[in-house]
Image (cartoon, rainbow, N blue to C red; front, side):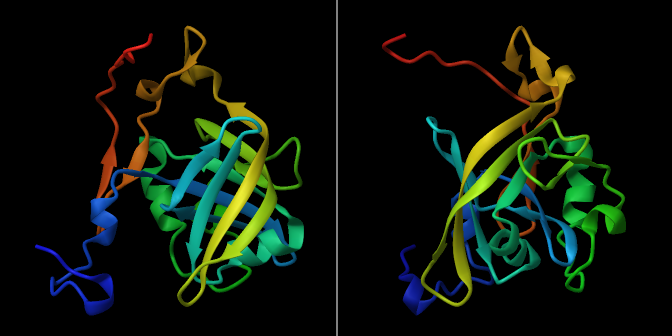
Amino acid sequence: MFYRPADGHGLPHNPFNALIAPRPIGWISTRGPLGDNLAPYSFFNAVAYVPPQVMFASTGAKDSLANLRAAGCFAVNVVGEAALHAMSDTSEGFPPGTDEFTAVGVARAQCTTIDCPRVADAPATLECVLMQIIDLRGRDNFLILGEVTGVHIADDCLTAGRFDATKYRPVARMGYRDYTVVRDVFELKRPDD
């Protein structure tokens, strides 16, 4: 099968997201004029090591975006299997100004380097200052770039000095309404190791 996105795919559901999988989930927390916000984004990833930088993309001008513009910072909370349902519940289309931490019952803590809440029980959280918001093609598509200024790692997620995914089992987004949990982890050396 071949299709041009501009012409349509002819399938019952758009396959695009399913082709780029699994995708890590950035559970983004922000604080703005209307209060705290917590929302999952499956277009999320790291983009640079030094200084450490991340990106996430928003389809729609959501509360997270408004808070970013007002406060200039955000936190990326790593999602483990234990938080799967809470993460999904925060994706509900709540009215503007709804505090998802409270609405869904997610424990919050204060970030250290930025004025922003974070998920208290997350395996890890990246505190980020906003670098840039880029308008993408299409209606209400935005790319958000941030520099990581602080990192929280849960002590029980460290093994022999390494962040251990088997301790929290990362959740990732597949296509459609499908998710996966990482349970099988292996090391593969590079040819020049």
